[in-house]
Length: 138
Image (cartoon, rainbow, N blue to C red):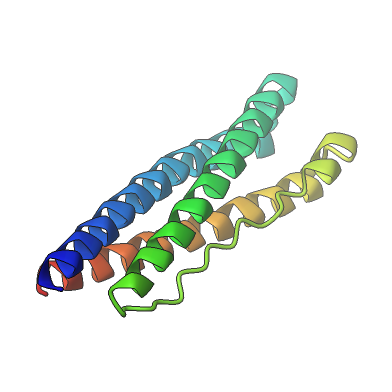
């Protein structure tokens, strides 16, 4: 039984490390989207709007990956009787409004969504780090 628990524990740690990595990748892309969004807000033009949307699309993809990794981490934690509520909300980025109503209001709303996604990713990173720290003390 001890051997099986050790294997499950190692799987949980590995899943947590994967989740942490994907969350940090999403954070970096969200930071880039935010920065390009600021340029767009300041009148950066079509190029900055295009780059911002590209970064937002990539950030959404990375958040989806992080969500899958978090679900796997939660399953692995369940295997060692450490159920945790690890939900990552990926949100929608109002890209429709940004494409068709490109103006200061739409840009501001998009920036707000990017910031909320950044906050959610940061909170998820904090929670995963906390749980991994607990696992190290087991």
